[in-house]
Amino acid sequence: MRFYVETFGCQMNVADSLEMARRLRARGYRATPDMDRADVVLVNTCTVRDHAEHKALSFLGRLADWKELVPGRRIVFAGCAAERLKDQLQRRFPQVDAVVGAKSISDFDRLLDEQGLFPGVGGGSCSGPPPPLGGPSQKGGKKILDERGTVPLFDGKKEWTDAWGWSAGLGPSGLPGEGATAYITIMRGCNFGCTYCVVPSVRGRELYRPALSILDEAAERVANGQREVLLLGQTVNSYRPVGSNPGRDGKDIRHFSDLLEAVSALPGIERVRYMSPHPHYIDELFAERLGRLPQVPPHIHLPVQSGSDAVLSRMRRNYTRDDFCRKLDLLRRHVPGLAVTTDFIVGFPGETDDDFEASLRLGREADLDGAYIFKYSPRPGTASAQGPDDVSDALKEERLARLMAETDSRSRAKMAAWVGQTQTILVEAVRPEGDGFELEGRTAHCRKMYVSSRRSAAVGATLEARVDRADGKTLYGTALDDRV
Ligand code: 5AD
Ligand code: SF4
Image (cartoon, rainbow, N blue to C red; front, side, top):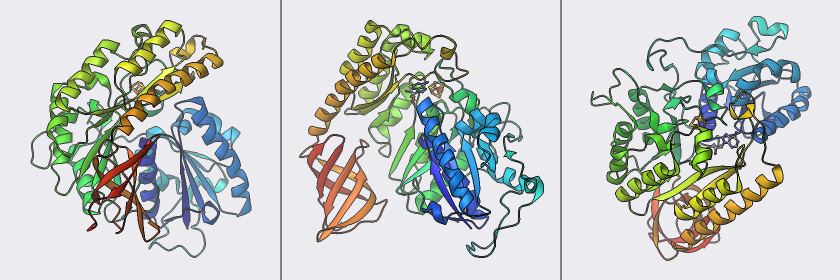
């Protein structure tokens, strides 16, 4: 039995997909990159903007034909859009066999057992008849797998379900997101209440994973050759478990800065990244660790959303433009040359020309290395969607283009400054090229770089390379050390 995974959305979703994939593999299912050879398609979805949700739903629409072609094929619809739409899904998409909402992903395995939809087929076999369907699913009913784990106390109310976590010994599945970088979820949910954001309603309140579970997974991933880890959470630096949370040396890990230090201390680890921090939790201790820990690269993706105090306040972001700039100053004092990228939303309700100009100014003055810019998209159930979406689409487009032109030109200038310098890249892919190889990787500043090398290198290895040219968001160069 084979399964195919399609993931929409952010890195949290990639990590969730990998976890669900591991669970299926533990039952003897095999991953395939070819949907036509799959018996099960797992679609993991995003709902952060209307466009993202729409993409997932049109993919699901197309799966009706895929399912019809071969009897016994199954579809699992998972993630944030699944959580938001679960009541309507059964009616609108009868082809779906199981819905796994974003709040239930950590219960995926147990829920599959309970529903009997995907019983273990044992031994990694990929031949033989499909496993018998058990339980109520035989009657053709769709299963809503939306129960939450009911293990007591970790965030004060509920505990991280620790059946979740790295399934030891399974090794990489070959799915996207399981290359040089280990994606490790350290927390779920969000306690902020940004007025435009649907995430708290689909992912719930913050729940922190015990440090030992994180550290064990990270250590095992490093031992398997993934020497970069990406610690993931909706607001990753708000990690603050209550109660005892010992690390490997028995000392309590109280907050994100402690965790960063403990993960960096794992033997063999090369890079420790994290996504996405919230400006509210950037403090002196964090900045100091960033400056001191060589494993933590000099790059931060710190979403600002707007440069206007009026808009930030209506977004309920918990900081002003000055607060944000002060946080950047603090970080840069500890980490000279820190690369900073951010997210902006344009066309938030009531955004005036002056508000937008303030975002443009921030884009200029904050000396950003890059920005992701999104047109405001009203999400059902959010506070800002109660009022009118009063900036026209044409104006949103115009603002998006202007802000992008501004941030892209800075980004290009910063890229050009790398030319002639030596960078350490972490190899993510290797391809033959002429007499040698093209190595694809990332610099410490998280820039994509293609390197020509006479010798090959292992995915996950690091090597020194000279930057020969920069083009848009990509660097090109030559390996300095041919012993790689
Ligand atoms: N409309 C537009 N952009 C949004 N984002 C989150 N919610 C919305 C929305 N309703 C953007 C924010 C966030 C990024 C992941 O998506 O910029 O940082
Ligand atoms: Fe959404 Fe704000 Fe939470 Fe980020 S911090 S997930 S934007 S509510």
